[in-house]
Amino acid sequence: MLRTCMIVVSAATLALACTPKPDTSADASAPPAETGSTAPDIAAAAAAGDPDPRLPTVDPATITADSSVADVMHAFIIPGSESLFAAESEAPVDEAGWTRLQKAAQDVITGCEMLKEPARSMGPEWDKTCDTVIAATKMSAEALAQNNADDLVFTDGDMMAGCTSCHQQFRDMVVPEGHLAEEPSPN
Image 1 (spheres, rainbow, N blue to C red):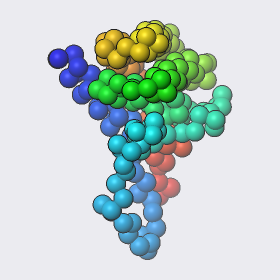
Image 2: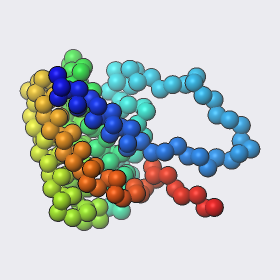
Image 3: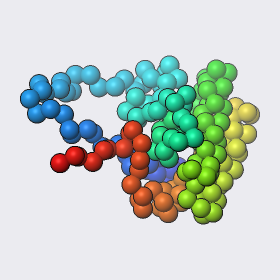
Image 4: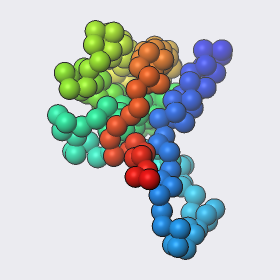
């Protein structure tokens, strides 16, 4: 129970920490945006197999060798890991749901492999933490191949530990780059 609570808290912290800051450079003369009336329908997105609409994403097809760490994270790792974490509390009810989760696991693995590429790697410790996430995600994929949500809880915890280790060592030390990162004001 404690491990599950720690995983949920870690996942929420990760989602909050990886969410880019809102753009505050809007024209002051523009009319204020409507608020409160169009909240994202998280349950509908989950039922459709879509990612959490509160999380910014990058189209994986736009990722190139020059894409930033932040863009790779938002194209592959965050949407994939969020799907896996969501399955811990609500397992798929059909084969299509299990297939979507296997794709989510593969997205995390693909994203971590991309983070190890020379243009994005920050050295041996970076690569080691990516390898930890890859190994744990492969274990999650094995649980998914057996349609086993119970094992997924434990393997996802190992994946989260790898993510947390990487974030503690690297994320807060380097300002993210990419189109999701807040651009500095020209003033």
